[in-house]
Each structure stands twice: as structure tokens, then as C-alpha cells.
Image (cartoon, rainbow, N blue to C red; front, side, top):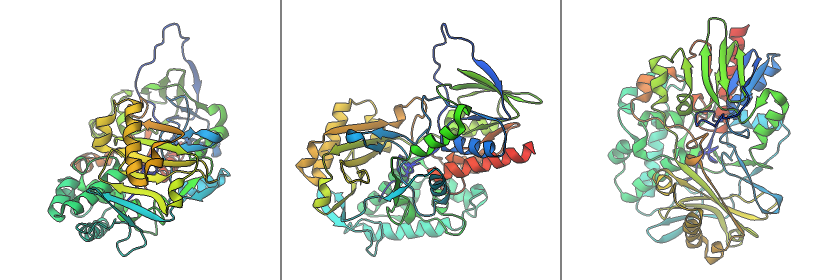
Length: 495
């Protein structure tokens, strides 16, 4: 199994991944000059993939635009981490996968190249102290070879795929059986349909690796929508695609790291992008909208808010948002995840016939990938620490976290793993401009009662971000699609 994510993990790899943050801690303004003012046709809040894509489309349509970003960098949940030897690895969204055509086309347009995620040799399944090698080309596909639970987990996976076929991607709350599905958690469905401990464990790992949330945290309707969204206009979504490396959501990476995508987008937009300027307030007037940030007050005809709903809900709005939209933002918490990378002189596990991909019941590093740069050196072994495990460890020291992770790596690959030349971490829950990753998750009842507010404009305010996408929701591809859609909506109004 693997992450979504920050793609997964929109992922941090898989998962995860999407628009940039621009909401609230308040910076000190003592002695600071008053923010300058400017006018533009459109103001964009957030310089992640969604906001930058919207601004790019608007600029190409000859509209004036300004992008206000809270962080001191662009990219949002897409983040490169420099490592030894002048190479990079990714601390956030990382993978480009099958049917993710919009992010792939954008990367190509920006002159970026891809390379295959390392997927040679055997994956490792570690459960109850026993290590089992496996390959995803077997009859159970991405399901690891647990002798007591794999067949049951595979059957559940296929059942979920079939159920997702009836989901209305544009309006999941209007799907057949929506009330039944949104009236229960994924945990409830799992317990009613999977009965062996190992089968349940495999479903748990699938959930945490895709959402960085526990099965008890998410609505069954949301899970089925997410599966259905893991495709495109001609390929139905499948859970197999979400959790498979190749062909799947984790099949490719960007040479030089995924953050090069927003960096090059921002470079093309030039001075239109203002970083280090958190938005505090959005005021709608009869003929304009006023967006106040720390460095700049921007006045426009329309504003696109391209940050996660939970962060968008922390902004001040005048007049206040409609109840449905405001209550929606109260009910879409972010997933909980850390990404950790140990760097070695070389990827020694490859010589031993391992792909670097692990599914394990031994935490905190329960899902791992080979994150080695395309040149093959230095070796990089990455792990996701997710959901409840991430929440428990958010406050531990870096040294403690490093020791725990290297113990896991040594269990999987031997004592060589205890001696990296460097160790890196990114704790997304602790990042003040993101407060979690890779995607906002929906508990029971949210889609049914509040779903219609997810993309519906509020006066002059439009919404973007991977959480608003109907294909590849939660991934970089979904973020790009949402920016394209929001820009088209605004252009239609301005025309």
C-alpha cells in the first residue's frame, strides 16, 4: 500500500497536496509601515498550486492579478528539502501518477522532466514480527501477502471500487445511497465487512496512507467519493490506483523536486506574487472586494481564496459568510502527518533486492518509499508518520523521532539503516500556515448537509484548492484543476 497523498501524501507524496496557506497567526506590527494599496482585476489568496494556476490563467487572459501568500515561500503543501551533495528531496507533495494529466501537462509546459519512482525488487510487509517480501504484480495487486487477511482485504477493496461507481463526482451528496454512506464512518463499514484482524489492519493502512486520518475520522461517502475521483474523464477511479506505485498515484517524480512547479509558475507571474503577507480580512462592497494582508491591501473585482477550508474559515469576512459555508469550514479538519527522510551514501537496500517500500504494523514509520534522487546517490529512505501516530509524536524532540524512525528502518533493512549521514523531517501539523496535510477530510454528515457550499461562490468570493476538485481531490492534479476551474468561473463573470 502507499500514500496518496501528498501528491499523497497532495501526498505529502500522495498525498498529498494542494493550495498554500494564508490564515491566521498574527504577526507583530509594532513599528511597521502601513500596508501599501493596489488595484487588480482579481486577487488570489494563497500561492500554492491552485492559486498560482488560477493566477496564471488570468494573466494569460490579460487580466491584472495579485497573489497574496502568508508563507515566505510559494508552493503550499509542495516543498523541496535540500539534502547533502546539492540534491533535493521532497518534504511535501511528491508523486505524479496515472491519469493525473493536468499536473503532468503543467510540469511539461514549465520545462520540467519526470523520472520513475524506484519500484524494482521486492516490497516488504512486516506484521506481528514477521517480514514477508511481495510484489504488486501478483494476483492480489497492491494488497500485501498476509496469510490470514489478504484475501479478505482484496475482496473489500474490490467491493469499495464497485460502490464508488455510483458516486456523483460533482455532487456526491446526491449519489444513490448517499444518506446511508454519509451516516457512517469508514471504521463502521470496515467492521461490518472485514472480520480478520489482519484484514482490518490492511484496510486501516489503506486509510491512513491515503488520508493521514484514521478510519473513524472519515465518512464512508467521502471515502467512496475520493476513490471515484482517482481517475479522469475516461478512466473510472479505483482504490487500487490510490495505493499503487506503478501504475498508480505514486508512479513518477519531478527531476529537481516538485516545488520547482510552483517556483517556476511564480517566476512567470513575477511581482504579481507577494509572499510573507498573510491575508487577514476580505470585505465585499457593491462594486469591489477589498483584501487586507500584512504587506498589501488589494482591491479587485473578484477574489479567489485558494487555501484549505479550515484555514479559509479563520479569515475575517465582511459581511459574514453564509452559515452553510462558515459551518463547512468548521467541519473539514486537515489530515495529520509527518514526513521523515534518512539519507545514506547510497541506497544500500537496492543491492539486497528491496524496493524501499514497506507496509508495517511497527511504528512510527509504517509506510516507506525509496526517495533517492534520479542520479542514484545519495540514498534516501522516506517514511510517512500518520494519523494517530503523528498526533502522539507531534511534540517529541527531533532526536527522539530520529531514533524511533531509524529503529524501524533497521528492523526492515538491517543495522546499516541506523547510520545515516543526515536526517530530515517535516511536521505538517505544526506548520502555522498549514496545520496539517495532505488534505482536509470529511467526517460523517458533512457532504450531505454542507457539501453544496464547497465550490459555490459567495458574492465576489470564489473558492479553489485541491479540496474543491472533482478529479484527484487531495492531490496536486486536483489543485491544478481547481485553479483552472476557478479562473474560468471568474473570467466568465468578468466578461
